Image (cartoon, rainbow, N blue to C red):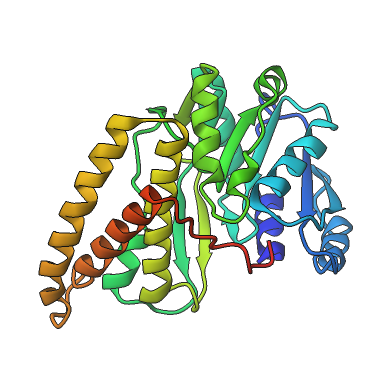
Length: 292
């Protein structure tokens, strides 16, 4: 997947009126340096438009490695830093579109869409839940996800922004990062044409994985509300979780019917339980055993 990603970046068109140089930094979070060989191969077979760099950082934790990426990236003295995940690949005009939207809106952060690409055929009853909401081009947002994100380097340095290490093993570090950006009066926009695709493996394209992700999302959301002391938000989420639980139980009757909403009840039950567990400070450490 890493090879596919880098090759897709090499194939990007570059508008020289906006982009002069591109440094690609691979941060390998594996102590065995398993990405080193392919990184070196890609370094010497790439396009002259890009310079590829490899860095090994074996300390685990989602926030830890993202902070390391920012620290190392800023050493290149860039105008912008772009996050793209290693299980994704990008389209030809991806980088240009991120830049166009950033320049047009004078944005501090710009996020592009991430579209699921399934490794094997998955039923619509499962695949529909992987598609994220899309927005109009140049729309101002109030959240961040780092799977496809450009950040103004000056803003990062001026505000000393980092990812919170309390989210190292739980995920949602990007959501909380977005809250910190907004607290510093940062602006976030949407680049609808800056398309990236996320590889959804056979293991992930299942109901079990989906329920775990929905549970974790609700769990992390409530944890953030608690951190931010959003009392009304907590009460609202508690009420919604009760509604989801009741609705979910009723909608379990849909499971025998083959249509794309058949798992609606399961999804809502998972979200409700995730919300309740977050309220009593039970955290779901989804990434504690993963090789991140």
